[in-house]
Length: 150
Image (cartoon, rainbow, N blue to C red; front, side, top):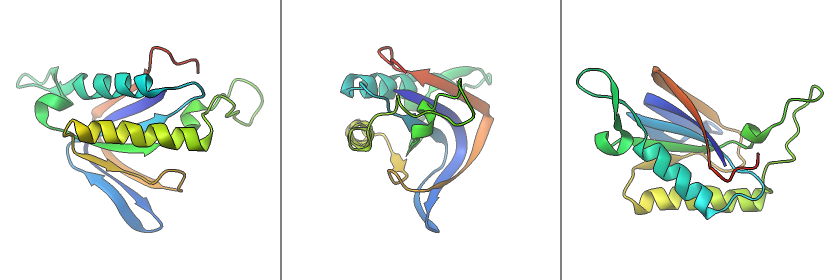
């Protein structure tokens, strides 16, 4: 499982002209799910992301986590994160999970965040989406679950 995360001051996702999710201060998570990914991968990434110290403290050092500052998450499915561009000129998505499995784990990730009381907004799985954000910093990280084979 792979995630690109961005610390934001605000963000939203729009589908067919309708805003499906919006947050203020928080983290945008572009979530790619690969073949073989399991719930433990989602659990690992959720815990890592929400507790990663990427928010500034009083001295403007990245010492606070999303949990510390009560940040929201905007979770957007993005299978293109599993694209392999090493050969040819068209990305291969062979390592991406099949849609039904990817949707199940995407929804699992969201449900686990909500169970922890984390404010979560989302896009719509497999929809064409427009994601708008103000990257605060800019701060961007790429994370993978330890068992990721992608």
